[in-house]
Image (tube, rainbow, N blue to C red; front, top):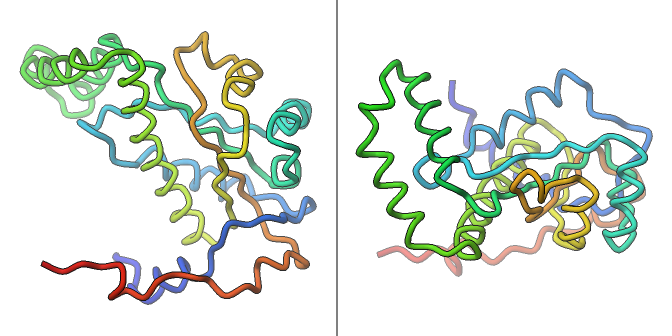
Length: 214
């Protein structure tokens, strides 16, 4: 059943970029198991899903990442840290994997999807490695948006963050050897009772100032 529109808007109004998490409050395992499925369901160009979502809960790893995240407290205090990593760059092998998965899920053959495969390969061939990574990164931001919205629907606080050193994240998490590059991160958990940002009015332009109707 659809979620009532007023509920969706209320939860989106409730969420904010949480700056101070309560380190004593953890997201229940069963709730997290649902929430981490949200970015997996995100749309992407061709449906190719050129990403991985690295969920970091290990305290030692979080401490190392904290040092290369300008020591922002969310890295340590939030219940979960998710690193949104994009293929760096996407390759023809990634397309082969996606086509095989499509055939498996839809009960068809790889051969029947040859035209679709060639279309994707053609698009990829028109980009150099840097362009392909930037393209994958844009797809990854879509997944971030879905994750943040899903967290709000589930009553979980979250904070999208670009204040970190991607190359250091790649090194600490071993992403480069996996053909990945960290793009953006999000912390998730529950807001601290004394986070002054929680009581600030949400500042957004009026709908008519933002929405153009043609």
